[in-house]
Length: 337
Image 1 (spheres, rainbow, N blue to C red):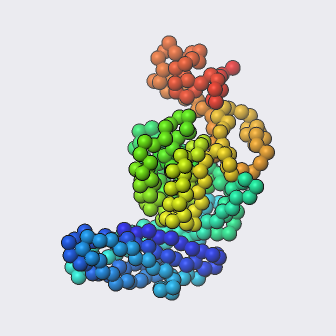
Image 2 (cartoon, one colour):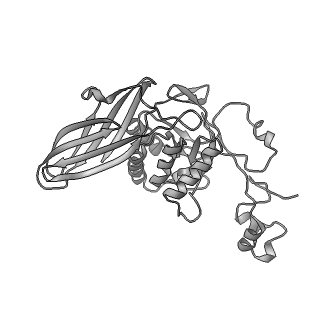
Image 3 (cartoon, helix red, strand yellow):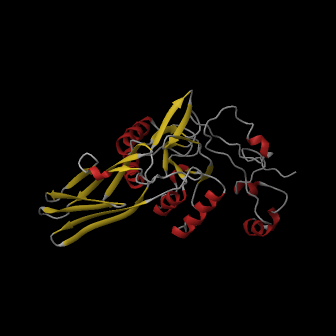
């Protein structure tokens, strides 16, 4: 029903732009009033729709001066300030009553970007933003996370003084994930659904991919925690998808930046994925690029190992360990000595 875009050119004022798409599913004209609240601000707009039609209603401070806020309460990432959220309500009323209603939380913040000397720099509300955080794949093994579980996991993330989560290959799509990040000041690096070219094929149906991307961007662009869109994991999307994503984000979410590749160009990646002395992680790279992937195998408890492997494969390490991503060599290099 709605999308919302925020502009805060300075920290002392914010211009709010609201875009609402109304759909008339009836075979007759429908007239009504679009009513809305943003925090303490309220507004009304008369709207008429022809049979079986859609209409985009755009509201901004030019037509509604109240949508220009003085000294707004800003949304900040964890460690930068409070992640303040406003209550938003949008209602469409006809002569017979409420036709549709949507409520959500919104944060006022401004993201800006530049690419200097092949380095991506990110700024929020005019301050340099340094992203630190985890690289998430599936929410968890059985896909059972909901509101409570996402909130706990994101709080843990914030408690570790992190301020960003990479939604790796876009595999986490639940609204509760994005809402938890809004509440706790965790910014989102949002991938699309393209694995490393060596690990996964290009889509057979590019148009289906593009249509899905458009729907997802519309669904998540209201969240103040959104920080960056990335086309592909450790590679570039096919040109037709790369071009479409770049154009689509410029159209639908113009205050956010898009980069094609998660590991090369203005950012870096590619590990290491093996256990190293802590100091070595800070000595591997001689530049200040945002680094997308780093990690190591996690050692299960003995009780978990017994449930995972047959007794004959418990020791020494072997190929069955490798099947569970605890390899003797390769990227993980997790050989026990």
